[in-house]
Length: 127
Image 1: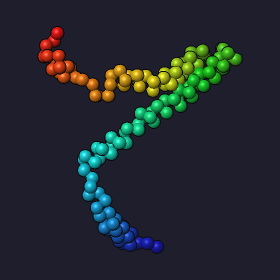
Image 2: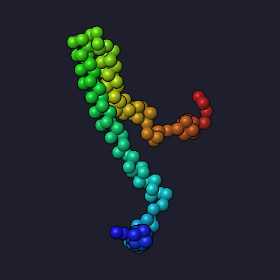
Image 3: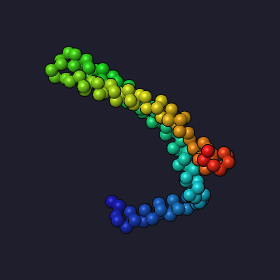
Image 4: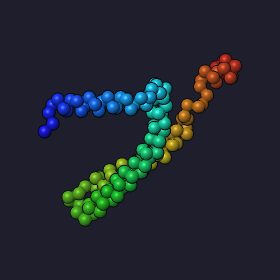
């Protein structure tokens, strides 16, 4: 049976081993590298969200069709609005990546000309 003293010694040995072997592993981390890693990780997020939106849009569309089928079979028990709501939500989710892409194209990604630059280009006046 391991006593408390042996457990503390084992934990101390593991801690010292981790500190010795880690060495320079964390010496290169700075705020800049951490921020760059976060930006690189987030860059694939829109693709992931598009895939999730498509999957849930199709799922809600199928569930809406099934709910409308249930309404046709038994109109007293299942309301038509339940299927219609699921179809509308599924269509919205299915169209979300297309709307996001159109919004990004229209508004831009921050590379456009600002109002101050446009004033400087046009000669400084409003007209």
